[in-house]
Amino acid sequence: MENRKSLRLKEYDYSQPGYYYVTLCTYNKECLFGYIADEVMVLNSKGKMVETYWLKLLDKFPDVELVEFIVMPNHIHGIIILKERKSIYEDFNKFSKPISCSLSTVINQFKASVTRWCNQNDFKHFSWQKSFYEHIIRSEASLASIREYIANNPIKWELDEYYQ
Image (cartoon, rainbow, N blue to C red; front, side, top):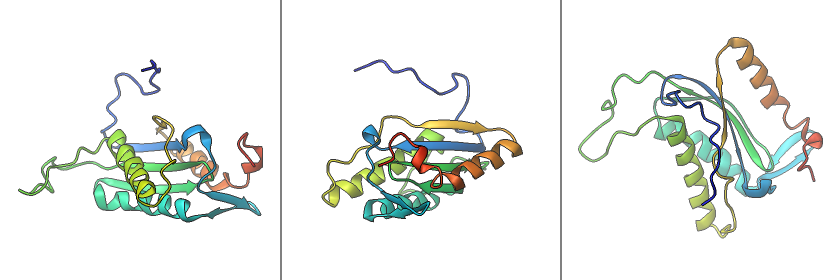
C-alpha cells in the first residue's frame, strides 16, 4: 500500500467540539452527481442520494449539526459542527453501543452509506477518493468566508479543471 502523507494536525483531537469544513471527492473526480445549468446544481439520482445521506447524519449522530453544504458534480462541501457531548453513554442502551463522534467517524459513516446505496442500485463502479479535505474553522470571519465559498461554488464551476 502506498504511503500517503496525512493532512490532519498531528496533535489535534478531531472529536473535540468545533466547526469543521470538509470536502469529499469522487474517485478520479468523476462527475457522477449531476451537472451545473445556469449556475445552479442539478442533482441526478446519485446526487439526490448523496444529499439524503448527508442529512441522515443528523439521525445517526445527535451531537452533529450541519451548517451549510452543497453537492457538486464530483464532490461535496460541507460545514459540520461537532457539539459538546455530555456523556459517551448518553444514548447507550443494552442493544447498541455508543458511537464515537469524531470527524473521521462521521465522514466514514457518510461515505459508507452512499457507497452501500450505490452498490445496491447498480452503480457498482462508484467510489470515493481516499480520505477527505478538512479545515478547522476558528473564527467568525473564516466561517463567513467558507459559507460564501460553498454558496458560490456552482457559479464558479466553469473555472474548475473538471468542468465538462
